[in-house]
Image 1 (tube, rainbow, N blue to C red):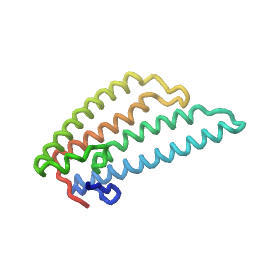
Image 2 (spheres, rainbow, N blue to C red):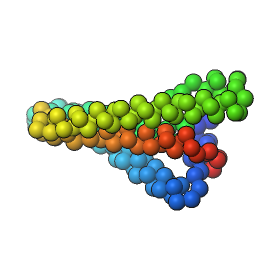
Image 3 (tube, rainbow, N blue to C red):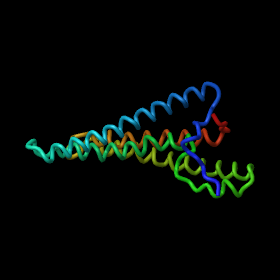
Image 4 (cartoon, rainbow, N blue to C red):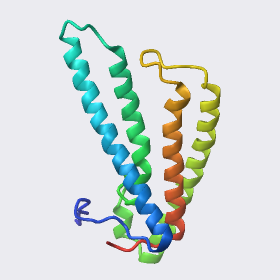
Length: 171
């Protein structure tokens, strides 16, 4: 059985001005993902330290850590799709001929783009409906809490649209 070595694979290369924009977006997504991961680690460590000290409990650290995990998931969704490292079954990659495999990938990108567009639409409605509500402990506006997953779905949808029309070359 052939195993795919994800760590050895480079990012797909896109040529031209679109490629520069995609590399910039990918850099920002990766940096935001790293910052959110660092924030989760820091917030959980603060929560543990405060819980066992005389400072009392800070409920906002746990809430912010949970929000950060959700944000991390959605922000990196487009990043992973663009690098072809999203969760997938690769069995069909070894069975189908190249042309049929391209048709399957295009169909999956179309489905992802349509679903992401629907989630972006619903996310905007949710942000509008929740604009006056704040989170219970950290007092973060819920419209901001829903903004980041909506942006994540938008970025994932854009990456799916690019996947439909662009052929990726290895780095």
